[in-house]
Length: 203
Image 1: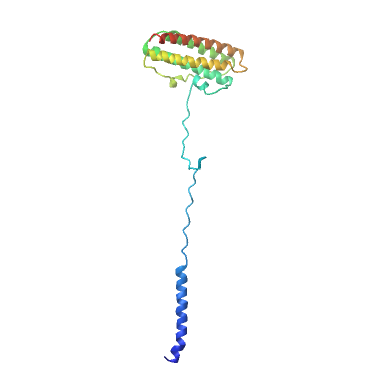
Image 2: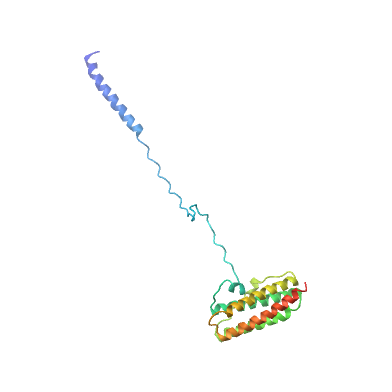
């Protein structure tokens, strides 16, 4: 080997070594990690498990004594409203029975009494310069299939009506004129209840 070859050989080895180190460093450099996607937000229940989506239940629409039964305290305005709604409801139900099945007692007599009940409540509204609520009972009417079902419906309606007036009469600071009317209407409904129960007993 010539002298010039002996001089170039170490230099060539150094270059090869440097090149090898450079290539090795590039190969070992980690690739950039992908940006993690944001974790979905979930609401957890009290047990720690993801809560299932819930939908709010549709509000229950009631009328008359059924509305009154959802509360334990009432303003005077609410009592008057629920009372006249329930009397509207009774009148509408009994009118439907008469129209559908003919003029049969006790419905004929009782529907006339319901008109008297409504007028008594209207008098309480007039005495207080309050507007009388419109009769919206048609959309809540239950249409029985026969006279027996009509009598059963009458029993249920009058029981609910009586309980409503009992609860109202236990309210504190009830004005005297309102108390008097409620007592009269409760007594009338008790008479109606007896008539419907007597009619139902024949079946």
